[in-house]
Length: 139
Ligand SMILES: CC(C)(COP(=O)(O)OP(=O)(O)OC[C@H]1O[C@@H](n2cnc3c(N)ncnc32)[C@H](O)[C@@H]1OP(=O)(O)O)[C@@H](O)C(=O)NCCC(=O)NCCS
Image (tube, rainbow, N blue to C red; front, side, top):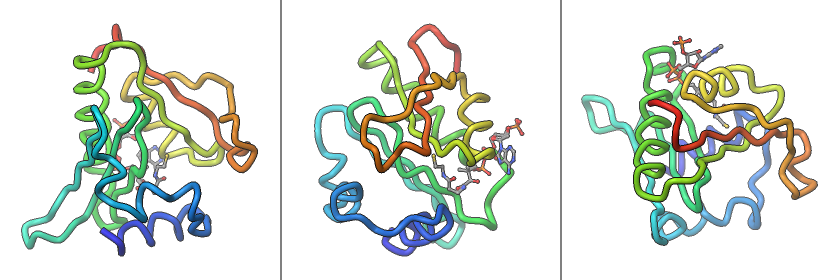
């Protein structure tokens, strides 16, 4: 998990931040609250090749290893987390996506999310946009 998280940060060009990344420093308790959930995908040798979590209605830490992309794994992780959250809690699910991350933007749109045009309140995330999916959207 630590290796995959490091690769995730590296690929997106982020430095680890003890504040923004507290959920991964204290993993898995960062996802242990009500409705929190973290999924990992493993290959035939039990190696972790993909991950994604949800807490407080936000999908986070979506990452698929480079050798495992393009086969629907990212979509399955997102659909499973979003679908279960909406069935259980209703309302909306959101994700924060860099405006330059075309693959992730497309993936969330294909999963029924809509780009809101809004950036997160935290100024460190001003290059990102909030995507949302409401309960009524199909999965
Ligand atoms: C984004 C990411 C999770 C996609 O994972 P994946 O398993 O390859 O995605 P899928 O195969 O499930 O693709 C789902 C949809 O996403 C879109 N997509 C995925 N990769 C894409 C790419 N490189 N370019 C354009 N669209 C892409 C496609 O629309 C695809 O559906 P479609 O083929 O039916 O149109 C993966 O590229 C990744 O881990 N990237 C680095 C980390 C990251 O960006 N995380 C997201 C942070 S918000």
